[in-house]
Length: 77
Image (cartoon, rainbow, N blue to C red; front, side, top):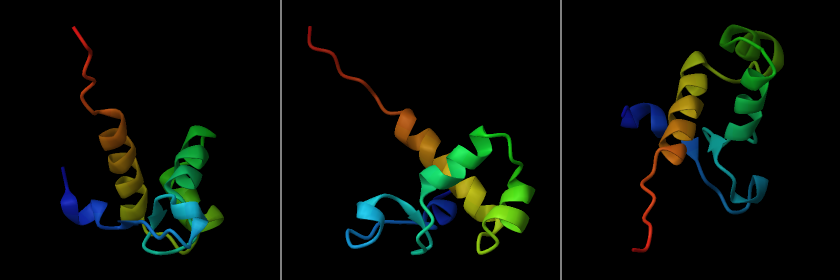
């Protein structure tokens, strides 16, 4: 996993309810994921919807989401 990209994901309890954001901005990871799910391309997101973002921020959001979903599940025997 690319840790440099994941460093773009920041947490601040005083900002956006402590939700993961991008580079200390008030743009949440979920905002980006929802735009992608709505069918926008990464290029549309960084040029039209959220111009403060960089293409690497989109990749960081996807890596973060994948890491959160790909965790081991322990079951009691």
